[in-house]
Length: 428
Ligand SMILES: [Zn+2]
Image 1: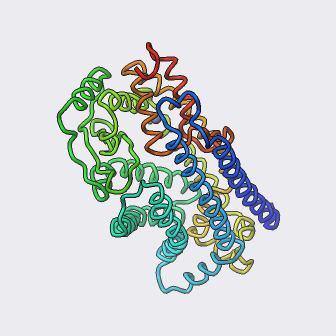
Image 2: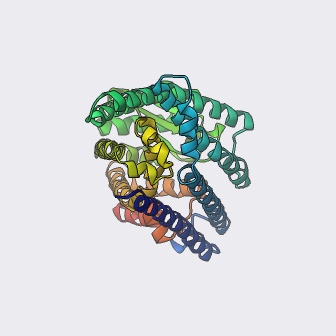
Image 3: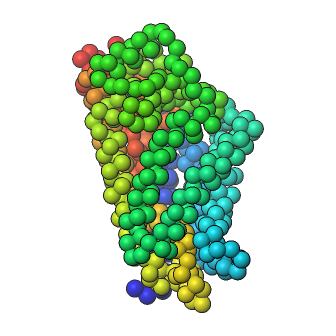
C-alpha cells in the first residue's frame, strides 16, 4: 500500500464513522421525539406520561450532546494525525536527553493528556449540566475533582509500568514481541481484576456489608440454591454521585463479591432485588463472563499481531500525517506506532459495534431466562421497569440505533419475553 492510499482510506473511514455516529444519533432523537407524548401501552399502567416525557427529553439531551462530542473528537483525531501534531510531539520528545524508552513513554503520556484535556469539559458538562438538569446529579465539584485526581493517579500507577513493559518488549523481544506483549497484557488484566474490588473501587466509594433483613435472607437463599459462593455482599454508596441504580459482581474465583448500589436497595422490594441478582448470577453460571474474557483475549492477540505488522510499514506512519523525514525516526520508536494504532483503531472497528452489541444482547436474554427459572420473572419485570424509570432510559429507542449500540435489549422486548416466561401475568 502507498502512504497516500492509506491516507485516503483513513480519512474515508473517519468520515464514514462520524457520518454513522451522527446519523444514528439523529435517528434516535427523531424516533424518541415521535413517541414522546404518551407512555407506550404495555407500560401505561406503571409509568406515567410525565416520567415518559422526562425520559424522552433526557435521551434527546444526551444524544445532542453526543453529536457535538463526536464532532470534536473527530477534529482532534485529524489534528493529531493529518494535522501534524503527533509529528511535532515526536520531534519534541526526540530531542530530550532521556533514554529512548522514557521518550516513548512521554510521547504516550502527551497523547493521553491531550485526549484527557479534550474530554474533561464534556465530562463536566454531562455531570453538572445534563445530569443536574434531570435531577440525577449528586456529585459536588469537590468530589468530581477528587475523582479526577484519583483517576489520574490510578492510571499512572497501573498504566506507566504497563507502558514501560510493552514498549520494552516492542524494542527488545524480537519479531514475536507481540506474543510476549499479549502475555503481559493478559497478566495486567488479571491484576486489575484482583485489585479492582479490594483496592481501586474503595478509593472512590465506601463499601459496607449488606445489612441483615428480608433482602439479605432472600439473597443468601438464592446464592445457596444456585450453588454460588461469594466472599461478601456489599452495599456501595452510589448515591454519593448519582441517582442511577445498579448491581454487579466483581472479582473472581472465591473472592467474588456482590455489590448493590444503595440507590437500588432503596428503590426495590426484596423480591425484586433477588430477581436482579438472579439475572447477574445467570451471567456467571452461563459462563458469559468467561466467554467475554476469551473473546477479548483472542481479539487483543489479533490486534497486537496487526500492530506488529503495521509498525514495520512506512506507509502506516506517512499515511497518518508523519512527515517523510520523520518517518525514519518514527519507525525506530515503538511508542509512535503504539500511539498511532490506539488513536486510529476505533475508526476502523466502529462498524463492528453491532456484532458486539448483538452478542451482548443474546447474553442478556439468556440471563433473563436464568433469572426467570431461579427467581420470579414477574419481580424482574417490576424491577426493570423501576430501573428504567429511575435511569430515565427511553422505552421507545430507534431500532437501528439500538442494534448498533445497545448492550441490553430494549425494555419493551425484554419485558415481553420475561412476561412470556412468567407463570402468572407480569405485575403480580
Ligand atoms: Zn445483564
